[in-house]
Amino acid sequence: MRRIVLILLVLCNVMIARAQSFAINTDVALLALQTYNIGADMTIGNRSTLGMSVFTVNQPYWHKGIRVTGAQPEYRYYFGGRPLYHHFVGLGLLAADYNFVQKGKRYDGYALGAGLTFGYVFG
Image (cartoon, rainbow, N blue to C red; front, side):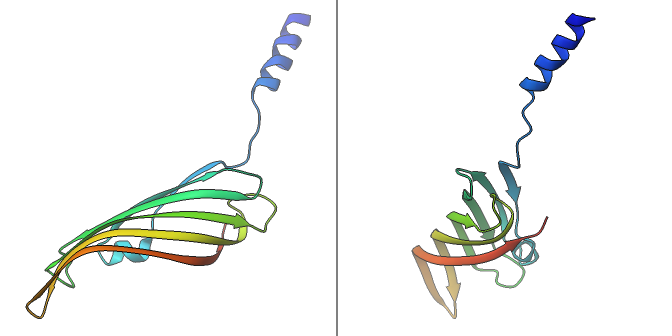
């Protein structure tokens, strides 16, 4: 009997209950525009996460001559006391490769950008 109790105590100590440390997401508004995207967020501290999203669009229904592929890394700081919870601010970057034709003129190149984000996580 003592062995069983000891084994249960050891197993309880091995199974550490941790808060959410990894999340996979997508943007439904972009999916409605046929821009396929997926992202992942990983906690890196008590109140912060690093995220990476990738997206691509290839001849959507609203513009047949467009192709864009890109990536968006982002750092977020959460005010809710833990990562992936309540209000956050963040710093995001953007790198994209585009190729499209508009009014007979072809645009082909790379785009780089940076920005600040603010949001709220429901859940």
